[in-house]
Length: 372
Image (cartoon, rainbow, N blue to C red; front, side, top):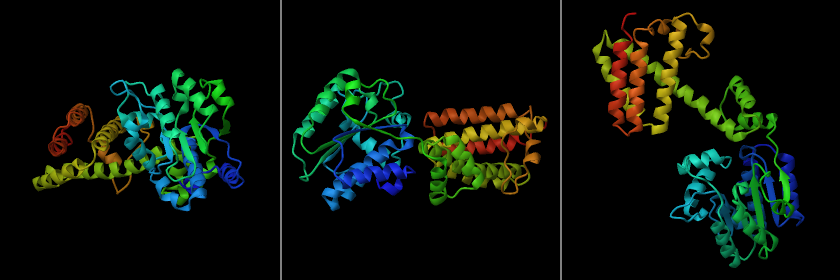
């Protein structure tokens, strides 16, 4: 993680870099703030700077999270009564390389652990003690980053306190936490606490302008909703981009469906459309179904004169929203939504996606021409 990849926090980044240059790095630091504010990215960039100062060739290893003297601990669930970060490191590494601003909700989704308790358990601390009892692989410092240290259970926290009080020589410990209210006061007293504030709106705006193609209106909306959280901003941005693609495919579907009644040869286009949608991953297909259902409901409201409730319309690609909405009414809306629900059901159960989308596309062509 490079400093310039971190959104905002210029003053804080300079302070951290200066502490390394002047050899004033505390052996244990606690970065406190929401994950989306940049606690882990700052910890990773800080660790990289320490290791690079000792060995200028270490950067690539740190960037790929393959440096043998850089260790990570994070919340996991028990597998066969064992709970070690190392069992899930590949998943953690992939997540952090894709988005180091990820939060606990993202991590839980990756592990599919909605019904499992994610925590840092005492056996993880035993594993840390074993690792740091060994000599450094590259002859310099060893660094431990504990992501979401506030998720340590009480046994782990008490045992970690001993490691914190008497760390091995040339060891740096960087903890991150979104909330310190339930952390042991003795752990807090033995760390240098670094508060990570929300990202300034100007910094979010500049980062979006430099790195993303986005209209000024959408940019302002994302910045307002993100509330200084880059993880939230990133998801909102992905949602904006996805809506644009969904809109394009929805327009294509509706136009082909209208043509089929007069020109049956347009069925071929619907089949090709269905095959294209079927190449998307499962989550994206399910999101598209949700988008389609939403647009049909909004068209119904438009048709029945409730325009004040229509918070979103399709107006791109010369699509005539008002004309389209007249074809969505009480005689067909229930059937349309039921077919979308059926498609959702079969996708969730891993049905043949090409068949599901082709069937849905063809059925729409029938329902659109049903008279009120």
